[in-house]
Length: 430
Image: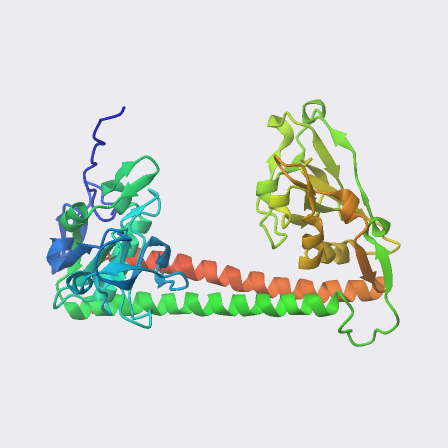
């Protein structure tokens, strides 16, 4: 109701440590309000370990010189993005108060409940002196406190929901709050050497994840370039020659138009909706059963290509590896296999040029790709044998990228386990 003051929830312990009441505390450890921690660790409020300051409120007509500042759009989990840095007027005194130094930890003060407190350490990413807006909180570690350890500890708090527990939520925005953050009690190693050792171990894993991110991005660029060359005939694979044939899209595919009412099927049917396909990759992320479906569905068979009709979902495409039904917001494209293989057709619809053509839409409420335009899209196609070879090369690239992504996900899981072990003192490094 209007005028009511939202309740402020009590801060929960920094991490959930599963300790049964009947368990004995291991030698060298002690039971505390945040769980079992090493005897030589302390429970200390954040404000005792560093200076906590909120940034300057945005004021476009305030006195002072224009100064660059960071905001929530610049601070992500473990990284600072300086692609979109704004400026506002600040006096010299204000800029001195809000200016950033290497080693400052920045946290999102106002965010969604899931992202509140998202943070990263600042390491001079911006090429000139800059400050922070009040959307951010700055933690500046005191002497004998490792800033990098603090950054990892705060990231762990954000990921495990600790910040969400102490945040004050108003409408759709949750506020961490300087005062609540300062008072939050966390477990800290007394030894700065141990803090540094923990931070170094976790930073090494972060570096590996970042290296995998860069390698995956590079592989995707290579794949895009290869598609552009191979699918247009600008580059030929060894052993193939001869002219390619130009065909209208409607010559090489036939849209399936069979519709079914799931309630009349009488059995469970594999069903694909728009949200089940990862945009831009063609990967199937999930499926549902028709047992609880009430709207009409389109029928597809193995080898058909599903392509999202809605303008917002033109990069939702999938090569069916089984039969089933799908949302009528897909075109179900059946390849004319005398002219084109299903694999090659799938590569054609994943090209930017095809998606751009399909973006010509009709309708205003929910714009859909216009088949009258798409059917006339011209496609250059080689022999079936060359199509198969080209699709295999691109598929191998996809498999390599997927393997790297799986390795990255496994590394992230390893890091999560390391954080649980190291930041609670379960595993000691010194």
